[in-house]
Image 1 (cartoon, helix red, strand yellow):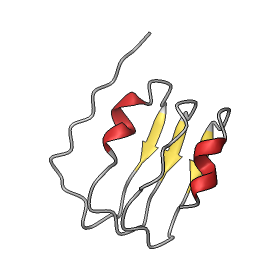
Image 2 (cartoon, rainbow, N blue to C red):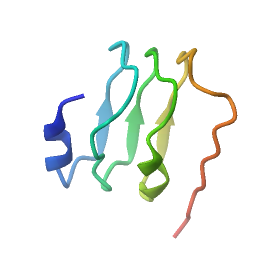
Image 3 (cartoon, helix red, strand yellow):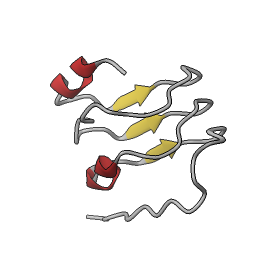
Length: 77
């Protein structure tokens, strides 16, 4: 994932579908509403995912290495 993503403070949708990603090591903009990471090789989610309070859609299907005991806390305003 390109580091320049963290420099896009108004980014609302980000899709890296079928990119063979194993991890997400760049800071994600807090403006994200949709994050699509389906069909990759992710083993874990970045800790920052809980800080994305504007998130409306998070797509993670077909990441076989992803632990199934992921806990996501959602804050509704």
